Amino acid sequence: MTWSHLTQAAAQRSAAGLDRSLRSREQGEQLLDLAGNDYLGLSDDPRVVAAAQEALRAWGAGATASRLITGSIRLHEDLEAALAAYFGAAGALVFSSGYLANLAAITALADDETLIVSDAFNHASIVDACRLSRADVVIVPHRDIAALSHALEANNRRRALVVTESVFSVDGDAADLSGLYEVSSRHGAALLVDEAHSFGVVGEGGSVAAAGLAGREDIVITATLSKAAGAQGGAIIAAQPVIEHLINTARPLIFDTGLAPAATAAALAAVRIMTTDPDRCAKVREAARRIHGLAVARGLEAAAPDGAVVSVVLPDARGGVAERERWRSRQILVGLFRPPSVPDGRSRLRLTAKATLTESDFEHIDSALAGVPTEVILPETEPGPSRGRGVTATIASP
Ligand code: PMP
Image (cartoon, rainbow, N blue to C red; front, top):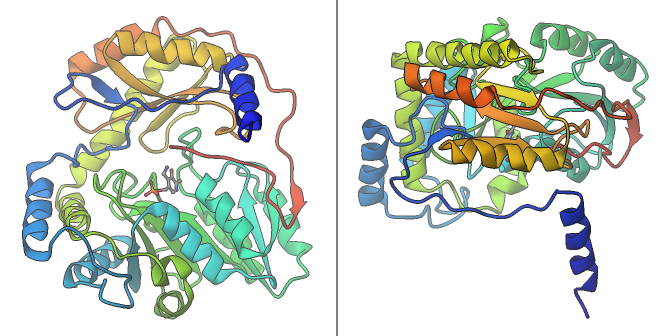
């Protein structure tokens, strides 16, 4: 049979407890959602929803074409100005997803004369972009600035691009952006920071601004509009020469339909709320610290959160599925990271804090945490540096 290899692969996945399936949410479901990325609770905020409805009425359902044809609308420009102001940069460009923003930035800024140095825990969209770029790619151990320095010293390409997440989706820990920038600029390398998990959460203008680096010409920021902004889409925030280069060369801008009007207006309303109500952002960080404190008090292993994500390490993948189901039976949705979505082979229960959590939610979370197994099996190998055109680490978060 044509698909026998797929059936075999499915059987292997199932035996390893690694099969995945889709489960739809039902409208009006009364579940506590610690699995989604709606950190600020903005996806159903009446102001955000009203902005999307108005855009739908005024502009229709779709952008109708790619950005360079007829797919650029005034709303994109307004959102780009708001994003540039939020991050303290000269310009911004919006894309139809954060995944495409990373593909666009990395493939347009790196080529076969470039060395890319990428953190081992970087997101799958970064991994894929590195592969597509044809650059020489070195993967350095997670948050290892000395390894970055070695890689840049050994660089024999004309250019270098250092790529990191600001707050990592796997463990919710932060990159040392000042340290990365210091080493990168000393070697004439540009720094790309994916602010997917810090936009709307860290500081009042994201992680790059919080590190005092807003507006540097050699820093490029990417972001998603689908997490704290509660909408859909992605963005690149950068200096004007970078924006112009992207408009002329980035394939996800040239060959993909522009971001839909409703998503654009929703994201714009969300950025305005983030700017006028920074307490909301402080609240989500406080909620994450509280969940982390509860987990540690129950003897669980979890990195201290620098954003909204708290990742609790689990003994094995099969245990993870049972654990997620146990939380669901308590009316709580939690995320589960399993191989191949985790770089070090250790499964994690992923609890996402929200600005809207109540006292009774925290009690509910604490009682569910009491049942999480504490025995942890360490991985046989840690990810080390690797060099080559291909990227060996495969990391993804949903
Ligand atoms: N970068 C990171 C770090 C992410 O976690 C995600 C979302 N999982 C993305 C990029 C992709 O964003 P989007 O969902 O908007 O495509």
